[in-house]
Image (cartoon, rainbow, N blue to C red; front, side):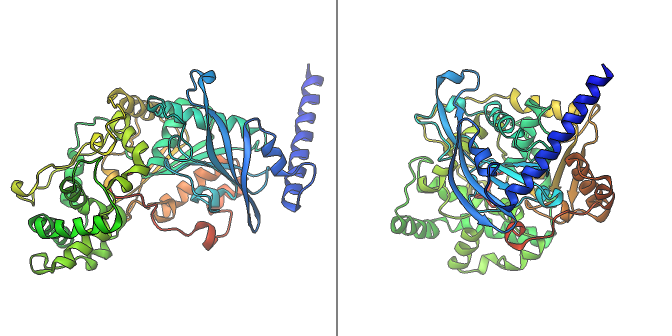
Length: 471
């Protein structure tokens, strides 16, 4: 028996050596073990494009997925993924933003930290990764987690090292749901600014957040502009109508220009804190009551975007609103600084942002299940939030049973909070845990610094900006 075990160990070492050699060969250039050939040998994988980038191979691919993972024979669709290939001997980071996938080479923070490969997945039902015809009942968090599971299983043989899943905002939620349903796949999870709306009808945490975020002066400025935009509704809606006509915008999904106008204005304060910093308060009109119509319009449009609640603006985000209205939940906040007579609709539910032809029914147990699982079963999970980010008002928390897991907050940061923005001790802790989960050398873990140098083209980015009030 011992002889057999020694033989098996020797064979394992040999295979590992050959894998490392193959990785070096792929970095040097095409040959019999070229990484492109290995990727395309995966059943259902096809190449859309390869883009050059120094030190990497970058591929845009499509992968055949079942529409329904419970009934694989019921039809398939093509899901878009990208691969930023470093070396098969390096760790791999599995990233999704929870929306469309970018086809421009980029590197997420954990990828830089571990100096690894990166696989990025487009979330199902975001075009072009949408079945045709679209059975919207197959858009749920389990089906999406199963998409990731199949991709991981398909690529694990090519990238045999440790894997870490990550994502920001809805992508952080996605990484968490994936861990909940397939906890044996990943060696670690880094979830950035991930909302956790456990009870959809209880949103008082957001009201408390807005009552104390930033400074009183900044809050007063923002609230005054928001109120003034509703006080001046008539003249500014005329401008909105002219703008929509010039751009060809329509309002069939939300129901009217008036509803769209109010939705944009009510997003204003939330949008500022989601994407701006306290230092940006100087850009907000200081005396809203005496500001011009143009100043009010420009401030609201810059932060909220008057194009968003048009049919054309909403359409790319139909999958998000469908999920918000069926499983994820959506926030509702109050506006004590605005007289009731100026608010006609309040925060509108996700149902108002999805075409009526698509049926929706809310499942209140979905988020409770995930929350309970994280509290008591989290293992190797890191949650990072921004102090001034509204989405962090309802966040994931840890309880009895969680192991080697952390919830950390970056001071003064918004929806772009990251490990680099943490206080020094927490930054070192988070970096070390990511490195250890990735399986790198103990000395690298002890140094607790990113293994790859910062690359301005790959790593520098603004806050991942989806339209306001989308995580």
